[in-house]
Image 1 (cartoon, each protein chain N blue to C red):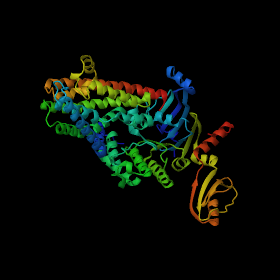
Image 2 (cartoon, rainbow over the protein chains, first blue to last red; image 1 turned 135 degrees about the vertical axis):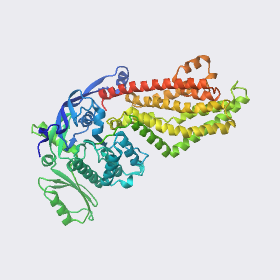
Image 3 (cartoon, chains in turn orange, green; image 1 turned 120 degrees about the vertical axis):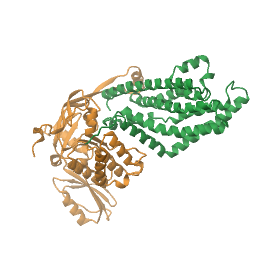
Image 4 (cartoon, chains in turn cyan, orange; image 1 turned 90 degrees about the horizontal axis):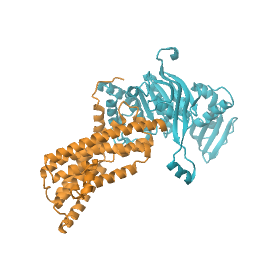
Amino acid sequence: MPNPAHQPNGFAIRVRGLTKVFRVPDRPPGLAGAVRQLFRPKSKSVRAVDELSFEIARGERVAFVGPNGAGKSTTIKVLSGILHPDAGEVEVAGLLPWRDRRELGFRIGTVFGQRTQLWYHLPAGDTFDLLAHVYEQDPAVHARRRAELVEIFGIGDLLTKPVRQLSLGERMRCEIVASLLHAPDVLFLDEPTIGLDVTAKAVIRDLIRDRSQADGSTVLLTSHDTGDMERVCDRVIVIHEGRLLLDQPVRALRQGYIRRKVITLLTAEESPALELDGVEIVAQEPHRTVLEVDLDRTPVDKVVAHALENARLRDLTVEDPPMEEIVQAIYARAANGDGVS
Amino acid sequence: MTAVAVSPTAKYRHVALLGARQTFVERGALVARSAFVLLILLVFSRLWETVRELGGLGSMGAADLLWYLAVTEWVAIGTLQTWVAVQEDVRTGDIAYLLPRPMSYVGYRVAEGLGRVGAHMLVIGAASLLGAWAFSGSLPSAPAGLLLAAPLAMLASAVLVVFYIWVGLLAFWLQDAQPAYFIFQKLLFVFGGLMLPLTIYPEWLRTISLWTPFSALLYGPASLVFEGDAEAALWTALRLVFWGAAAALLLRVTYARARRRLEVNGG
């Protein structure tokens, strides 16, 4: 496959030296400080994004991660045309976001896990109808696209229920369909699986990945859930304090930084005896044992086999370490002068 | 994506229709507000009757005063607090969801407000007018004025929606727009003549009130129930159109400043 960087207009997103500075109140502590602030308000500059550069090819699925306050939301707001950068160049779907905001609106979709674009008291189908008008879709095209997405996302039975009666997982499937109806070239996803149970998370991740592959759409996903990044994306960009910290394939990140898994076992025995090299019991209560596995010493399948031999399992979950821990490891390695990107 | 040529107002019209649908879905709230209007009219019908017996109403009839109140309450209660949705968009960050869409954010909220309030006004209007008729036992002294008052009450409510969206935008600066709404509402009640017509206000207060938009919003349509001539209705309509245009301009300027504030202070 040819490198998109060598194709004309092969990039969905190009960011060069993006910088965004905000003024925030500088409130001194205490009552006297509050009174002073009332009469002579002070503010300070905060560099939310600092000379950030990256490129995303069309059809790529990229995780955009970092700790809270790293500048992820600000970057996405600049990319979606909500904010104007103080310096740098940004191009999304061949458009200048803040200048071509209306035109860009037709080309991008957004899903924010903690927000909703669905009308709360009305069925999701009503919002879908509205979005056909908002995105000025041809009725026949809209009907075809809607029927296809409704079937793939399995939401046919949900379309006539008021949104307030849907479970979080059901609502999220409807939210994603709402964002895909106008077939956007670029999809911004912010914590799309937040609050969902394990099964619903898996369903949502598969749907997002498969849909992006089918449509050839570009995905930029921000999440604190390592699983979102691993199951949906091919590449990860890590930012910290507004600066690029790491940009590499998810596979490389997994090999380089995700060296640990957390396995939770629910067993018939109160305290099963599980002793294996590279496995540490980090929490234990009657019938529930939490293990931390060092993948450099023992693979997960070996731990599961060992658990099956030594205990009667009722349930088992395997989790990745939290994103914060991974970013911390990347940051620590960068601080030590090791190359990370 | 296949875009088709549509009228620029089509999407806003659809938002308004969905807003109207949402109002009819909230049946409990509609019933509660209608009952509240009826309770107010019942209380004031008894109150005005007592004041009349004491000779305190001057040339005004108790029935006319009740019909006047029915129209002012129709506008005041019928116009939902559309500023709340805007404030929530600003405070929760939901505005970031709406801004990238290919439509105006303010246009979206105004259209939604007009749809929701339009449907709400129809129900509250029916309750108010039926209540006034039932509790006063008669029509107002200028029954034809009632026919003129009804469309103007709807127009007044539409103008009030624009003002309320403006109040909601103040959350960009205040975080909580409730105090701004509180002040606006009190000014509306006092200068608009919610309980009593401006004709019985002291001269100086009446003069001040007539220069404000509030008197156009409440007193303007309501006074037609006893000053039911076409000339008064036309004058009220012109005042409402003027204040509607002023509110739209205020909204536009405030929104432009709010967007700049978003740029400076972050989302």
